[in-house]
Structures are given as C-alpha cells and as structure tokens.
Image (cartoon, rainbow, N blue to C red; front, top):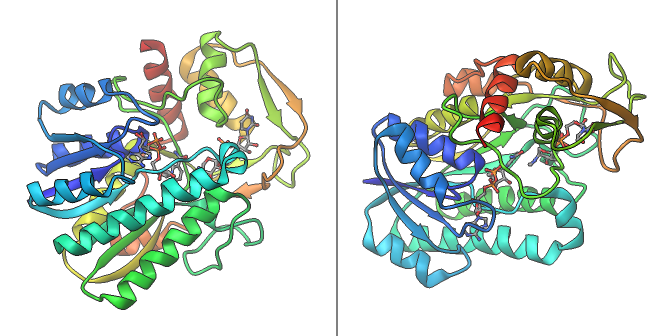
Length: 331
Ligand code: NAD
Ligand code: WQD
C-alpha cells in the first residue's frame, strides 16, 4: 500500500517525501512541474537511497488521476499541489480558484471512487485573516484577504462537508505558519523563480550578492522593534508533522485541524541578524513602507499538535538560516 503525494516535487512536498521514505513508506508522487523541477526527484532519491513511483500529471486531468488510483494500491493521500503566490492570486484569481479548488475536487472525487479515504491537506495560517488575536488557535473564525487565502478557507470547508457526507473519511488539515530552511544535505530547498516575494528567499539572494539590499516592509508596527513578527518553522520540522498526522489518520476517522508552527514569533530584523550570523555575510537593508495586506504579528498556539500529534518544532531560527544558506550556496 502506498501514500500518494500530490505536489511532491515542490518545496514542502519534497522534504516530506524524504521523511516518508526514511520511515519506510511506499510513495507515489504526482506533480505537473508548474512550480518545480524534475531534478528534485533525483535529489530525493540521492538523499534517501530509496525509489518511488512518479507520475507527471495535472490534478485537473481527471483521467490521469483516475489512472493513478487504478494502477496502484493507494492507502492515503498527502495533498500539497496548489498555487501559492499571494500577489499573483490577486491578478489571476480564476486561475487560482480553478487550479486549487477544482484540482482538489477532482482529487477527492477520484479518491472516493477508488475507496481511498485518508487525506492530509496543506492549509495555511493565512486562514486566520486579519482580525484574530495572536496566538492563533484552531477554533478561531477563518477568513481571507486574497484569492489564494480564500482557496484555503474554501477547501477546508469542502473537506469538512465531505466528511459530514461520508464519515468513513479521515482528514487532517494542517495550517502551516512560515516554512523556511532546507534539508541539511543542501540538495533540496526553496528555489522560487525570479525575484522572491517571501522574506528568507529574498534575504538569501541578498547574502549571496544577487540582490543589493532587502526592503523591510515597515518599522512602525506594534511589535518590539516595529517590524513584522512571524512564526518561522523549519521545513524539516514541518515535514515531520505530516508523518505524525498520517500516523494518527490511520487510527481514526474524522476531520482534525492542526497548527504547525513553533509558537514563537521573530521580527524581520531578528531574521536578518540570524541570517547574517549563519551565513557570515552582510544583509544590507532599508526600511520601506508597509506591504498591503500585512499584519503586525502572526504566530501559532501549537498546543493542539503537541497534545494530539505528539509533534512540536525542534529546530531554531539559526538552524533555519544555516540550512537555507547551505542550499543557497550550493545552487
Ligand atoms: P510549491 O509550489 O513548491 O509546491 C507545490 C507543487 O504543486 C509544485 O511542485 C507544483 O508544480 C505542484 N502543482 C501545482 N498545481 C498542480 C496541479 N494542478 N497538478 C499537479 N501539480 C501541481 O509550494 P510549497 O511551498 O511546497 O507549498 C505546498 C502546499 O503548502 C501548497 O498547497 C501551499 O499553498 C501550502 N502552503 C505553503 C506555504 C509556504 O509558505 N510555502 C505556507 C502555507 C501553506
Ligand atoms: C514575512 C515578513 C513581511 C519580504 C506569506 C503568505 C502566507 C504563507 C506564508 C502560504 C513580513 C516581511 C517580507 C520582504 C519584508 N504562504 N518582508 N521584506 O507574508 O508572513 O506569509 O507566506 O500560505 O499566506 O502571505 O511571509 O515571507 O512574505 O513575509 O520586510 O522583502 O517579512 O512584511 O513581516 P508572510 P513573507
């Protein structure tokens, strides 16, 4: 019996595949490479010394997805595949809704058809919207400020409705905070095309000398040093959270929601300092205006995952910066 991983060639998916293979799981990866490269699959094989099945397919291609279920004994699905750029989702909302929501609907329909009833889904802290107080708890109301975020809010609802209609499903909704870092081998990591939007990929390019300076988006927030505070989580910790969620899924039915964060917030300037220390390179910055849609602070209450999944983040901000830098240097 195998675990089907959608989006397994992507940033979080590839790290999770490494952890799953190391645990002895049989894997099938499906990806359309819309935001990843085929080389990642070889890197997963190199790191683990293990093999897996791969299908180059789009979740929107129902026949291709049906064929995967027909040809394999799939026991559960970890569903990463989706588009994730917030700004792009504002300019291309229909593409985001179609890819993320229709892709998930087709996947769920084909799972149901094949009798596969276990799913781990990649949600996001973005579903806490702008109005909840920190730290965020799983029972707080959800909302979004952009189409990307709405796809996560809507898919969470779709999965809850699916379980209500078919209680033999077992679904784990994981709300990731800010995933950063890379595998310690330096062979896989986050490698966005063009100029990065997110903080650590941008800092990495400044440290490497490919970009001249970071613009800090606002220093007048109600935080200790005035810059935005986020809950950064090492991608390998995050990957291990999926193993814990999968183990739990195998013992019960239901829908459970978990924050995967460290519970601790760091400011932009603290991240800059940690990256400078870990890389030994300067990260020049200027203070700019606030970025539209940003909030002052975002961090998790991680207690539910600790209690029910027996999982908690282990790695420090320094570890995240060191591993991001190792990957960046090797590129
Ligand atoms: P990523 O873009 O690196 O990985 C997503 C993968 O899915 C890519 O390899 C892409 O090619 C594939 N894909 C996209 N649409 C597809 C489709 N229709 N059919 C087949 N493959 C498709 O992103 P990531 O950072 O690894 O994120 C994984 C998941 O976690 C996403 O659902 C994302 O929304 C969610 N998430 C990410 C973050 C983050 O900051 N990285 C935070 C919270 C949630
Ligand atoms: C972090 C902090 C910025 C870039 C995003 C998505 C969210 C989730 C994770 C998917 C903020 C500041 C950033 C820069 C800066 N993704 N910053 N200069 O916005 O917390 O979350 O990724 O679900 O949905 O919105 O992450 O890395 O963009 O920003 O000062 O050049 O760094 O203002 O305080 P964010 P980020």
